[in-house]
Image (cartoon, rainbow, N blue to C red; front, side):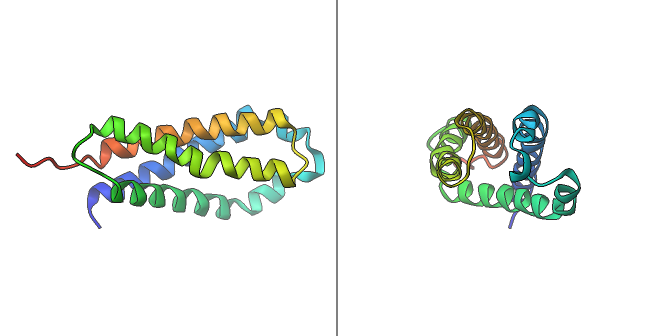
Length: 139
């Protein structure tokens, strides 16, 4: 494990955590409040906060690890990061929320917002992780 990987994992964790807080905790707060008893109460959410933090930590380091495995020295880091961020949207974000929509009584507009906001977060993670774990080009 090298320092670039650790920094990329921490950056991924922070982007995921902050994106989740801004998009789900602030912007979509009203949408979630309308769902009533489907969602946990604020006290119950606080009691489960360690699971949320662990989720973002795992996501940040897994994101950096998978990105580093597909890294090539051929394409610019920014291009690779954008492609990886978009790919993760199609691999994880979009299917996840479509499954939620199929099995939970969520409004379609909320699911659309969740997909858009989490896709923004994933693409931003791709860009930042790519700028930290740049390929070393030998000359």
